[in-house]
Amino acid sequence: MKRIITSIIVMVVVAAIQAATITLTVNSTRKQTITGFGAACCDGAMCPFGTDTNPVRLLYGPTSKIGLNIMRMEISPNFVGDIVVPEWGNWDSPYDWKGSLPSAKLVKQRGGIVFGTPWSPPGDYKTNGTAQGGNAEDQGYQRGKLREDCYEKFFPWLNTFLAYMKKNGVNVDAVSIQNEPDWWVSYSGCLYDPQDLVKLVKNYAYLLDRETYPGVKLISGESLGFTQNYTDPLMNDPTCREQIDIVAGHLYGHAPLDYMKQSAVLAAKYGKEVWMTEHSSTDNIGDRLPTWHEQLLFAEELNECMLAGCTGYIYWYMRAHWAFVSTGEAKYGAENKTKNKLLPRAFVMSHFSKHVTGSTRLTTSRDKTSGTEAASEYSAYIKGDSLIVMAIDTTKNAVDLKLTLPYKVKSGVHLLSTGNETENLCQENPITIDEPTREVTVEMPARSLNTYIFMIDQASAAIEDVKLANDDGAKVYYDLQGRQLVKPHGVCVEKSANGDSRILLMGR
Image 1: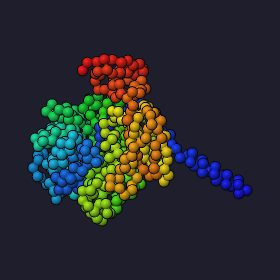
Image 2 (image 1 turned 30 degrees about the vertical axis):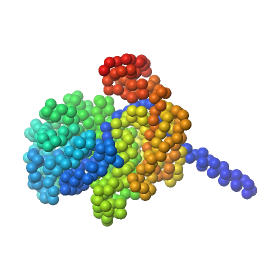
Image 3 (image 1 turned 180 degrees about the vertical axis):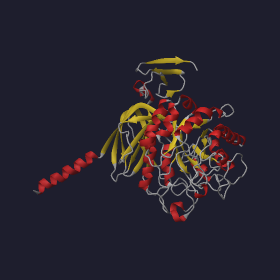
Image 4 (image 1 turned 60 degrees about the vertical axis):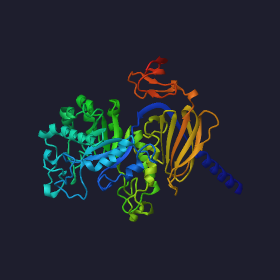
């Protein structure tokens, strides 16, 4: 009897060992190209208002440890850059366009993108006569909306913001219509119904001065939960669709693979970018730092945004005990005691911002279809000669990850974050590959965030395996390493939607 029991135990152990391998197939089908990652330079996080550039210095640029490249700033309701205190509140610091200039200049110097979002247009333009949203007793709970007789003033007002910033050395890359047009607030805010935005954009967005400010992009209203009723009407109207460059929203109350994924469908169809422009997944944790499990949930949010079709992810505050840079307040924990120190969440973000920016997402055999909780998540990307696989594991057991790749790879590196007490929470180890191969088995430790970066073997890059994500009859061109070209030149491969391909020799 003892022998039988022993045999059963051995069989169970062997079965457990065999089960500790997860297989992931990376396909060659290409989806969206990722513009980048960033955070907001807004009051509270950056006091004195925007003038403290320490967070930007730590977070932005290709040589920084984190590699952010998009900065969001508020377009306050003032007309000009003088220091003006809003009529509805008493602020301790200048609530004005000039407040964000130092940080914006630094981001631009480091090759980044700067965009502005109004929380409210000037109070004179609104139904309640104030920049306040209207959710206050002294306003009689009057909802503050943009008056229809002021629709024609809205985009010229944005032009004054662009002019001021340019005059002071910052060429703004994009402007949004409104922060959370569906959220009635007591602070600075403005309400729009979906059809209000359609009317505003359709009839007046042509007044945005794109000739004087070439390249400036227009961002849709950034709804609280990235809801389709605020994005689809703009995409369904041909005139609005021509004016809107970026479809945007926030994630409050809805996971990325819910409303955001749905809103991205029409945006992708019409070649628009999809930006998640504000969320803070653990800003309500109180007087403590996020746990490592909560950091992994943040990593899963980033990953799910990519799977939903996101091309740009912008976090909320740069500096907060639940964000990227410490505040210097010891009450939130030892790591936050020293001001302007990179926090664990920054290094979680770096897995994406340092390596996924500029890449094109590839599909995998384990792409999630919904926002339901999962023990592990994955995504994959191609950037130049690099093939990138992201893997997040929230369980207590380490596993082996068996990868089947679309191209042969000849070398690799494993970037690992486990929450252990290391200086930068990101360990780097080589991946040994004896000869070019499409199958690699790598370690995925327990409760870990992993980025595996492989170098594609150019001699065996299978350009014939590249598939088109959108079968719209268009021809797409690649170089001999499998990289998609904006314009065909040199020796390249022309691939049609029906799968036909031919090698061309093109002049520049």
